[in-house]
Amino acid sequence: MLKIEGLHYTYEDGTPALNGIDLEIGQGDFVAVLGSNGSGKSTLIRHLNGLYKPSLGRVLFQGKPLGDVEEAEIFSKIGIVFQDPDDQLFASTVEEDVAFGPTNMGLPPEEIKERVHQALHMVNMQDFARKSVHALSHGQKKRICIAGILAMQPEIIVLDEPTAGLDPMGVHLLMHLLEDLNREKGITMIMATHVVDLVPLFMSRIAILSRGEVLRYGAPDEVFGDSEMLQKAKLHLPLIAELMHILKTRDNVKLHHVPLTVGEARREILRLLTVEDVKQRV
Ligand SMILES: Nc1ncnc2c1ncn2[C@@H]1O[C@H](COP(=O)(O)OP(=O)(O)OP(=O)(O)O)[C@@H](O)[C@H]1O
Ligand SMILES: [Mg+2]
Image 1 (cartoon, protein in one colour):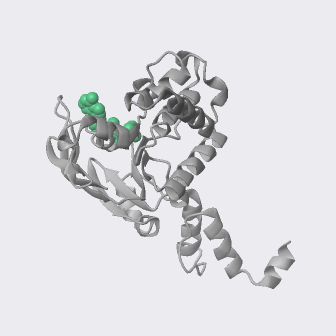
Image 2 (tube, helix red, strand yellow):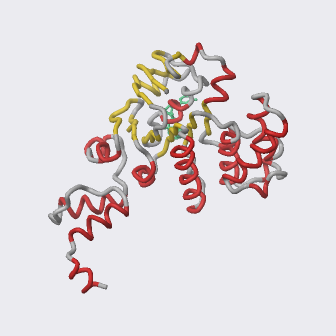
Image 3 (cartoon, rainbow, N blue to C red):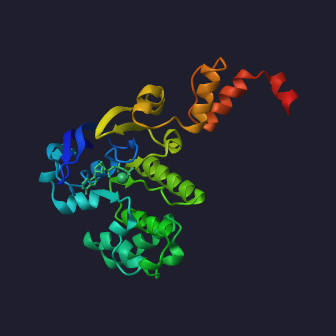
């Protein structure tokens, strides 16, 4: 679906932000790009719809270099939600903003109306359609940016730190929405984040980014099994995995593997406790 080959990018002031990125993202993948501040996540993301041109290397979409794909096709098939909502929103009202993409795609007015309505509903902002974009809170603005992309029904959705600034319910709703779109509609998802706790719950693959390089690209089990590499990337294990890792290494608890989620940890703890233990403790 998307292939990144030897991607280098140096900013005008000489900052080498990407230093040779190779990544292959398959159709239907849910990929996390995980990295600390300044590791190059946003720079990488801005290459995925051709907004930035590589200093060296290339990005292929369905086998074609992005430079050879029509801008309108990229725009309708690859939706990007930027880190800062103020970089994305520009219309005066919420519904005008969400309608921008579908209007540009040349869809009939009835369909645009329906898509705007649906997209606002998906992010729980249906009551804000007539509100001025400037009068929204930060979290509300983020939801509107996401609605704007959903209304275009792209094949790939790329999100840069979409959960930053959302309240716990907002994070929960958004992640489940993305999961549904990925599983039911087969939309390929790429999400830049440094929230390690979200990753094992939702993503199928993780790319660890550090100083503009991919240190590791693989399944959560594999990536979170390499704690030395995570330290190098200035990241830590998901909190629950950290606890289980300590129980295993310091307290010699006989774990089969280090669980990454609350559900896995619960099963592993119950396996260790005999039924009698559980009864006594209840
Ligand atoms: N416009 C710019 N001009 C010069 N250097 C830049 C510019 N934007 C980013 N950089 C530099 O490029 C590097 C990567 O920045 P980038 O924004 O891609 O990181 P990030 O992983 O998204 O970080 P964060 O977690 O803080 O969002 C950093 O060293 C940053 O200082
Ligand atoms: Mg960023």
